[in-house]
Length: 129
Image (tube, rainbow, N blue to C red):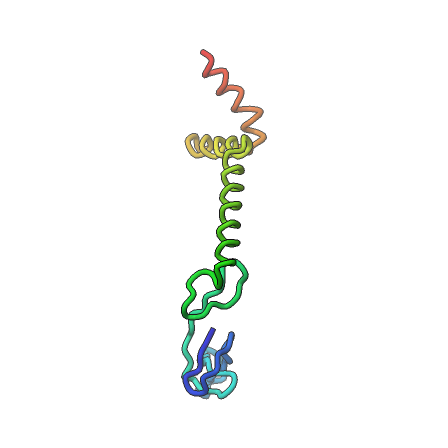
């Protein structure tokens, strides 16, 4: 987001002018300016949006635009964290981490299937002894 100090307009993208300085081939200079008044006196403006609904936040709000959005946002975050914990603790994910660790330690590049059929049975035999 940009803000023009001369006309006071806010805009998403600045207009770009290419200044050739009389040259026929690059490098050319690209100048950004206000698309409304053509002034080069523009500043980039940080804009924040609500984490829940995406509405543009005013100066007083920091993360959420309203208490109801805060409540919905926190509930969505709790559900997402629960989902991540379930995925992280799944047996498939544990074996994939095991494959990555084995490959890193031994300098190999086994896939999940290769590890499960070729390596894992040998590791289990070694543990029984």
